[in-house]
Image (cartoon, rainbow, N blue to C red; front, top):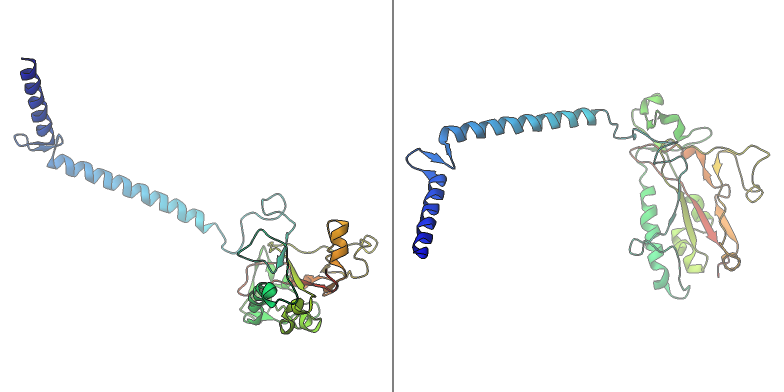
Length: 275
């Protein structure tokens, strides 16, 4: 009897669920008629369409307030900050965490990766499109206004042309491609750059406040760098270092702004007696 009642209850349950899925007598599916399904689907279609349209409208309004070339907030008090960091080349992509340059002057393969990295980095300077030769008081600051570069500031020009950074002086000083940037002679050249920071300009030292360590090389409107070992042993092995240019990075290439072909300036360190 118990088994019989169990089977009967199961059959009734299956029949009830089947009617819920599709009730032929009432013409319903899942408890709703075709008209009811059309109404509810139409409601949600309109509801979500309006919701998506509202979201797209808000996004469009927000994006219209942004400048593609200038961040809304930059400078003091922002995450960008006011002082640029220092970068260097050759920086190896396959070993990004290592700052150690190690090679054997008698083994070309030991330094070829550094030469290739410098070749690739410097190749962009051969593109002179949208650049100009800045002489005298000419600088990128002439194009800068409210965080961006504007061509209309310079009369007679409708293209933003950044100051051209020329590499001739490095080749003449012994840091050229023809001698593998000094690696083939055991006198490697390393490039130091300042990270691009919109609006940043170097500030000159007062005549009586130039640090003694750079006083002989310092010039106004230049970013003069000084590199040394972190320990006495490091300092001993670094040896003499020649800076190209001696005064450092010329301030005429600042401030940085988004330009068609901004050429980032740098200073080259020529290690003459590295051990």
